[in-house]
Length: 208
Image (cartoon, one colour):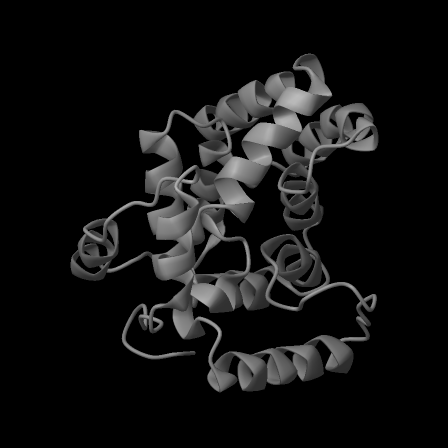
């Protein structure tokens, strides 16, 4: 089991005063386990400095604009694969069963495909198991990381870390296809409504 996954999950949660207090501890866990190289740790250190040093309301506004109002950066993984179709519900039921088989029960307000929840689950598994499951989402995660890099967001560091931890890297052709999709303007509410209503696109060779 690797606590690095749980630490990365914490850094991806909605900014609060508690997160500002505990983010340095999360970084210390990552450094102590040594699963990531110096370059990635340095990038995560910059993210932690931003989380701990910025005004909490500015942090919350940026987080919401990135992850709640930009479909291509949604932290709900199955939205990228299934959209709001029935298939997403079926996939989440299967994921819930996987969690329960490992003794993880979610709170009523938690969705199983929410990335921080998924990372918490990975932290309960052996490192090979965790790397394998993370690799199944590599196309989505690497595309999100590239989009965050384009935006100059320090959250890019978390996705760089996830790409390093996964046992499968995204196929360059599939990744290029994902990144060729048009980007949303989180302030254009009419365009956002239209984007969320569109048919879901399948990422990668299968829906797994």
